[in-house]
Length: 46
Image (cartoon, rainbow, N blue to C red):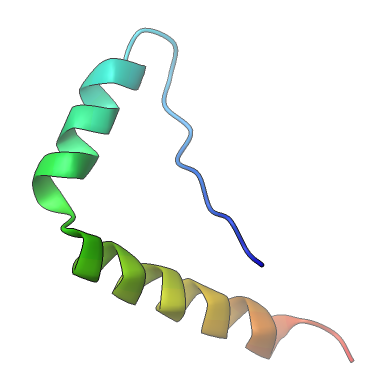
């Protein structure tokens, strides 16, 4: 299982979470996670 989290600067966490929820629908978030997973797996050694 791969879990990805966005790191926001101190004081911007709440704003960042609101922006993420407003922009990324669950389907869009899953698509981006799938793209990231494919990239990591492609670049992993072995």
